[in-house]
Length: 327
Ligand code: TXA
Ligand code: MG
Image (cartoon, rainbow, N blue to C red):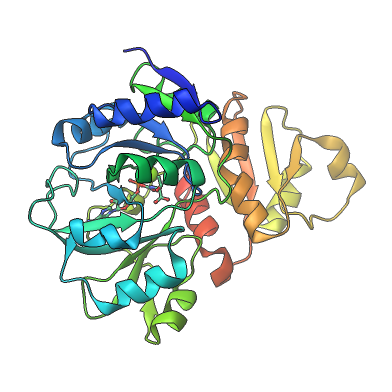
């Protein structure tokens, strides 16, 4: 299969992307979180091609992306009031809501479950495609199963060239980690995957408790322990262990440290060291990019300094633990 490389700044390329989607093809598209691998959610054959391209087990459900909250009723039933409250504040944006699926929605999309994940993305190019095509787009992150999510078209191309119909280049993702997934199908509202919107933010809009992610039995890839992994052995370690390690000669390892890492001549001279941005938002934006870059260097190991363990950093900590080879 030839993977067409399309540029979102070119109007005719955008139309090509839309046509491919309408005809049942697969197109990697930018979203504000990570690149998604999109196909027409109402076409089970098109959706099956997503699973094939990623090598993803068919029991792992996909998120359906829609243009606005007005389309929610085309995909879900028994929608609770909470969904509309959250949509008002957080849509378009990085929030996926789990709801009861409408009966006509193919179970290929939902991995056989009777619930459906729905999100209204804010990325302007994707918004334009959703609005002009009128489609609902099933789109998981555009990475091979268990690998790092992509935040640029180049990363998608490296991993999925020849396996999908097109890649639409729409610049780097502005958020950089996957959406928060909130389960609204039960009495108790629960975050199933940590993301840019925290449980407390959801809780204050809903005016009710919202639980943070725990290990659960629902078949979500985000719940697989070794999801989001670089190919290079990756270790998440404390500041003290980092300093000790850095004093050992180690030519083919890389050290990723937090912004406030102490200046220390002996350490600074030694090594391959990069420091991560100080703010959580900037850190999240470059996280996957940093890991992709290091993963391309054929290193023996990546040693990554563990960030703060606060609610604000919940999503990046979650992704780092999953990336880690020692749990
Ligand atoms: O930010 C995002 O959410 C990105 C962009 C492309 O929108 N998408 C994304 O999709 O991260 P994916 O497939 O890599 O992760 C979606 C997660 C999976 O863990 C999936 O199992 C879960 O959402 N999910 C989707 N529908 C579900 C359902 N009905 N019940 C439980 N989990 C569901
Ligand atoms: Mg994913």
